[in-house]
Length: 77
Image (cartoon, rainbow, N blue to C red; front, side):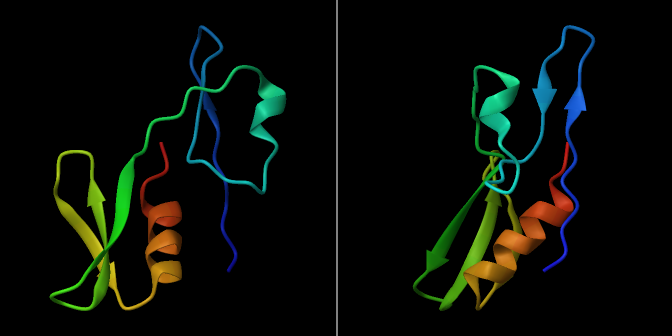
């Protein structure tokens, strides 16, 4: 999986990005983390689903890893 991690900075110095353990974000300072989406398993359909903060289904797959990859590629700030 080849994923580009994007960090944007606002004029006041606030950094925004999707969480990743590949980058030591704690070195930037105090963290405040908000989920961009939830990845949950749907028993009825037997698939993983990416659901945004408004409750809208954004993506689904049989693999949780595929949902994580989609999240990284499509929910960058």
